[in-house]
Structure formats: structure tokens, C-alpha cells
Image (cartoon, rainbow, N blue to C red; front, side, top):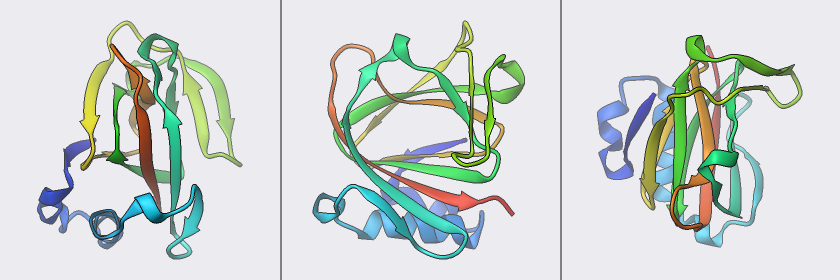
Length: 151
């Protein structure tokens, strides 16, 4: 997992060309002018623009993906994403190939990652994550999730 501000994106250029492409898109696009929906970048990369109100942290569940790396970017608003490593999780809902997602019970210990506008996280297939949450106050969120197919 990686957590940082988009202005530090150059620090991650050596990870992969696709992660670099995703971070450049996030830094250089005004998503306030982009409608919610799914947008193709290439045959191995797409992104989803979504607007929502964050939900209580205690209502969340841990998700894991096998096929895609998630690059989650907060364009506006704020949220908390819970993080737990896959090895520490108990399966709740089997893998769904169509959604590339499986769900796990929330463990006793979850790292709460506080994100504000301009922050991003990269979640790999071994990173369980619980997005769209808040602790104290709900927030209107504009988020972009770039999905990068795992090599």
C-alpha cells in the first residue's frame, strides 16, 4: 500500500509505467468537470469517477481485488479508508469474477487512513481496504479509482 499527496507522484514513477500513467491522469485532470462513470484508458487500465456521501466507519467491510490494483484519489471532500493485510482477514463473501471483488470480516485492528482532497492510496491484491468511511462527520466526496490490471 502507498499513501501520499498527488504532488509527490514523481516519487513513484519507477514502480511501473501504468501506475505512473494513472498518477499523471489524476494530477492533470479536473474531475469536477467529469461525469460519474467508467472511462477506459487502455485495455489494461480504466478509471471510475464517483460522487457519494461517506459512511460510518463501523458500517464498512473489507474488500480485496485479485485482478486489479486500485489507485484511489480524493478529488474533493475527505474520507477514511480502513486497511488490513489479506493474511489477517476472514472471508465473508467469495470472489466475484465480474466485479473482481471479495469481502472479508472487519478484523479487530484496522489502520485508518485519513484522506483529503489531493491525497491518493495504491492498494495491491494483498491489501484489504474499506473505502468511503468517516469517523466524526460525513463528507461529500468526489473520488476517482484507477484500476490497473496486475501484471
